[in-house]
Length: 122
Image 1 (cartoon, rainbow, N blue to C red):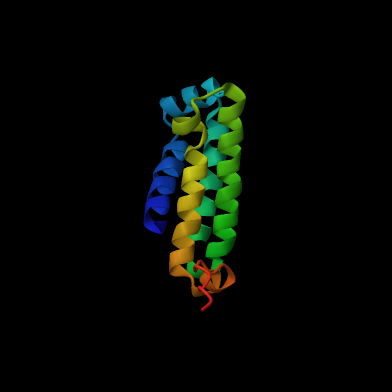
Image 2: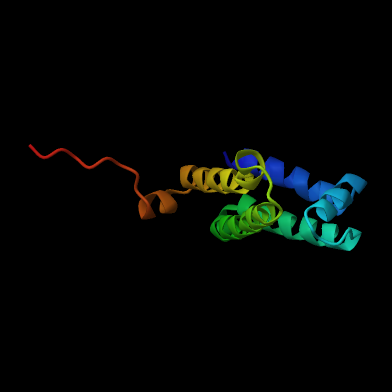
């Protein structure tokens, strides 16, 4: 799960850091200024959050920051009226994958949030 999130975010950050014309056009379509500097700034933020998430010592901070970043994408798509399940909730899907991956790879997170069924009393 974590690998999927990291791969997607590296791809997304890379596109924004270049930035390709499609990135600038899409940014403008979402209501932001068509600026290469803005795209690069978003790419830098995405890359930083992803790097923090990828390393075990800073993975929790990275997951929190990625969740905040994804919250921004949800708010942006909500504001422009994007389709709910494909665009607006994509950030939620990615954040859930990020936390799911962190849950699976970090014993301290599993201890903090144990997912077990209540035992039946006899």
